[in-house]
Length: 133
Image (cartoon, rainbow, N blue to C red; front, side, top):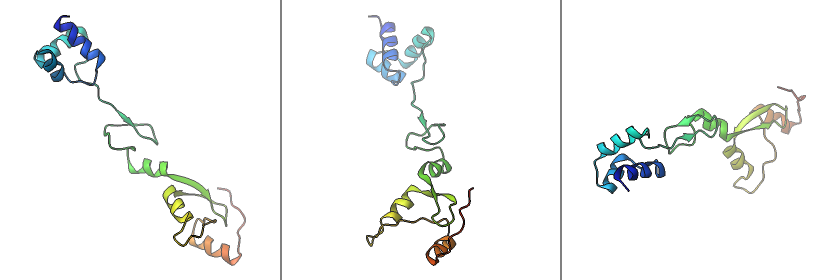
């Protein structure tokens, strides 16, 4: 095979390899590889993988992140639960629910409250009418 055909073959088979590596394997310069690729209409830049935010779906240029910002991470990691006293839906982080569900003393937490006031009123026997929000 001719050098031009090998350059085209390397680029189509391995889009992540850079031009310098192709030239090094074939014994030609990076500039010659660029010239051949440009004439053939192939991309001269190597393919870079894009990552997608798990919450909103935006692309992230960094490969070490799962979320594009802290807000997306918080939204993804929180769940909606209902207050056992007043019925209001509120959000808590999953890690907070798991940590508080199994306490260090071995007791399992069965009730979740939206505020300290609801917690106090629930155990004093003052249950509010359920509010829908």
